[in-house]
Length: 143
Image 1 (spheres, rainbow, N blue to C red):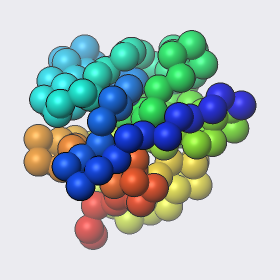
Image 2 (image 1 turned 30 degrees about the horizontal axis):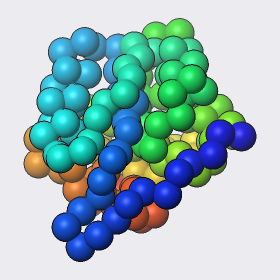
Image 3 (image 1 turned 90 degrees about the horizontal axis):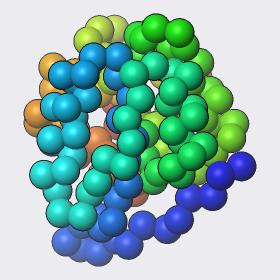
């Protein structure tokens, strides 16, 4: 298993956060990176375009958090999240999707992710979602 270091937390926020972003669309990865790195001391330390690459990046980089798309080629986000949960159970995974239906939230939880974010809400909800997961809380859309 891969260890997760304790994040320095204070009333002002979460510091020195290393994140891996996984999505098969380069433009989406760039947008997510831009939003995440707008926070002081948050860095996207790696990216992956599918679930196979995601597992490799997590093993190699040992991030503090993963932002993972659900629908991708080679290995989908559910399969990759299950593998990450087995090898590094303390690394929280925030899954992203374009689709909104309550059954999906159950599937996300069953895969081992701690949250799910609608891509259409990334601009307003990505930062709060990441903060929730780092504080060991869950984050799911209100249905």
